[in-house]
Length: 416
Image 1 (cartoon, rainbow, N blue to C red):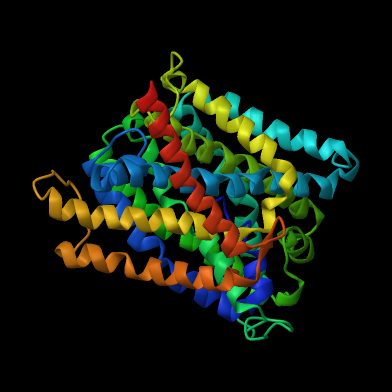
Image 2: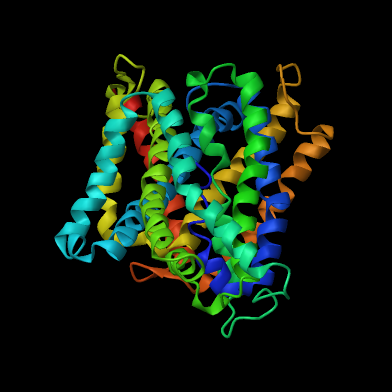
């Protein structure tokens, strides 16, 4: 749910150069990934309920803010989930461009969405095990790339590591880095489907934080030492790097890995997001039809509903609007940090198998780094535009509409 290998890092290299990219990828996890994984570890082990972050915020701050948490998360998903089918098609087009021309590209994107929906109907365990297999397959070409690149370097100089890019975009690099490291809280929504969540969530969060950072840093460092210029890196450039350093066969393997990345990221994220409408339906904030489960315990109405929403959003070309995604996701994330602190004060007796270190002060401090980084992302998005509107104004309208929708739902429930 957080990372599918180094795919997605190309723009960090191209915008910042190797040295700055390495610093960003090594430092940002301490202020972004680690605090969030600690927060998720505490709340998911203390309140392992279906719906995860929505349940935490509702329990700490009430129904209104719980709804806003869900609204912001689902709104962010519209932007985020549009990215992965596009990644699949963009890599497929590198080997079979005629298969993705015109309407065929749209059909492939729809195939990713509804194929993953069918996969999700098999249950959380099948999705989780499948994600591990897909990750191992897509990371294997990078293992070869790292070994060959370091062998070519063989200790001779710094390669391209110290060479700056001609047109740096540090703000853009930060935004893409944050996007590549976000999503830790998504694992919380399937807590009731996880075996021994009190034990496994904290271990999974902390272990994955270290593993993701490692899978980002090693290939970037290797190709930089091998001498590939940072300026040539943009989306899909790992294919070119593999062809130059190793040969066409590995380039083809990286293309296949990119297609797997599109499916491999979309599939578990679908599992995560579709549990949110289900949990809201339990509270009467969504139609009761969303409570329907199949024999494997999967909320199938919610799965199909979300698949339809994301399929309709594919034509909006949101794949480059990472800043908008960050603003909406970041707002929901800050509500989770507030819930962490509030629950510490309101429910001190709540059994917490894992705690963010440092007491209440430590819980407050955990949110400082993410808040500053989100603030920077919001500031950087001031010049972005979407549908003809300023990006921040657009994000503000999306957030404000959540309050209006909540008010309308309350009026309908009261009238009924």
